[in-house]
Length: 412
Image (cartoon, rainbow, N blue to C red):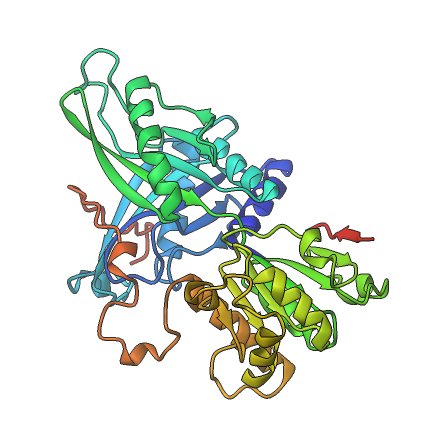
């Protein structure tokens, strides 16, 4: 399941149970760190933690602080600086050589954090994108001119049309400037932090892009499609299975899929929604079906198109559709992957599914899929890093005493 969906579901359960909660969000990273800006963790007063903001190094300390935040209801920024040896002294032992800033806030009813989490849940349910713009360095009331106080945790929530879906931000001029930047940030699909001037003081806004789960459409419902569905669901994608043989038994066999479409191959492309974020895998094991599917899919906006089978088979398919007639150019063919999957020596259906999902992820992240040990640049690209600065370093909290189509939608 998508990590954000897990957090949203856990929030609703805890809310129904009357538990107090806090939300931890990474808002900036400088240098090396396990998770990037936008990673979240939900903490309940019973001690449950859902999601992760590190490889297990920061969670305990953040959970301890969360209990205090639940009491005070005051949002705060915590900074972990692991560039020196202090983290080993503190007992964290990160050794990541970076700086991580975390926004920690209470999720009491009506709070900006609670509204933001509901906004995220709504985006996921609607399979739409959005922008959550959060103040992470504001202007205190005692420093601000009249009407220009901006508090940490205030937000502007924007859907993919940039319509406001919620706002705790009091400064309307600042909100207007945030909306201007949001279109560019939404298109980039990456979290960033930007500074604005309010009343002569600097205000930092963390723009977190809420990306809907990646749609994966699998044409084909034979036995080797099952592991692919499971692997894709493991990484949180939205999976649609199209059975071009229209067998009703497919509905039960593929109950893990989000949607199932039963129709003829000629009708299949029109029965699904294809966007620039969609990955498509063709594995019908029927040559004639694949000819029709490839003809339609090559001209679609899908970012990834993979076809199961050897390279010569795909070349024969391309010859069948007389690709020059359809004006298919090199950039269009660049989206076509055949043989499908990364070269990991896959033999079994489960291994092949792993290779396919890994290749899709690499392609969509514009990576080559090679060994990280051979990479001479940072694991996270420069444009993916966020160098927001902070003037205050807060040391970890230490507790006292310690150191014909039928469409079936499965509910998630």
